[in-house]
Image (cartoon, rainbow, N blue to C red):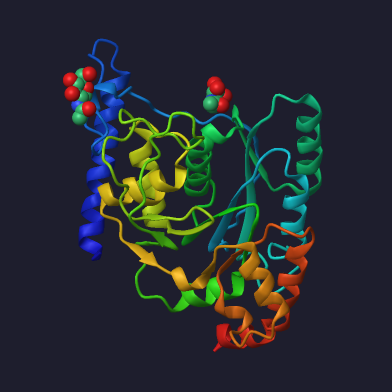
Length: 328
Ligand SMILES: *[C@@H]1O[C@H](CO)[C@@H](O)[C@H](O)[C@H]1NC(C)=O
Ligand SMILES: *[C@@H]1O[C@H](CO)[C@@H](O)[C@H](O)[C@H]1NC(C)=O
């Protein structure tokens, strides 16, 4: 996308945002007319400005931060969060210092015990962002929105925002090295999935009604495990989502496919850089795979427990080499 076109789009987005605010705050104005939300039936459109109220909003970025990692985490995943802190997000890693920061995005739990553990956890690590909505599978789209909104508001120096799930190992040296050499700045980078269909089985947990999404096929979209958003893309997505109705559950299709298509934000497919299964990761760690540690950007780790440490050691072993390429 050339810069002029990008600037025009931002301007249009801002203009619409302003008009919308004027429209909805004027006491006598009629309700905003339904708009066709990208094929989603406009008559069902509820004027939804998504206010985010935070229970906890840790400040992690400074003006030197150029990469913010937002980790989608479920309230109960205390151990997964700790594995991440102990491995790829380790704050003691000297080469990163203030340049790369990580926060965990949570909703709220109805369990008082879990909630007090989260408060305690944040007291120690100061890296939790907890918004006031029920942390549930069906609210994942809301969580993704909170992640992007927090990133755009509270980490304004970041060039890129990486959204990951809490069972994913990301290879920060590899990602940073790639970002420092990549030419395009205004896109979204990820493992792009194509020709996926909405699940129309009402009993399935991923069920999407025709009312929510009428088309038979999803646009190409980013697999949710790890998505690299440029700041520009994140800003546009937040502005757009603030004035639209969320499609619940399919947060990756929504923020990584439906909205980018509508906003004409290009997706860069980094498919080969992702290992989608824990089995592949295990094999890679155990074998003397010729592909170096900095080959992969993101790996899923499901089992066994403690596995993230093994991947971390392998990446660490190559880190000196990676640093060399970062500095050159
Ligand atoms: C949208 O909703 C209206 C009113 O309920 C209905 O008449 C129309 O057929 C719907 N359109 C689609 C594409 O579902
Ligand atoms: C999503 O969060 C809202 C706000 O807390 C809550 O009212 C709603 O029940 C949640 N949805 C689901 C399906 O859990």
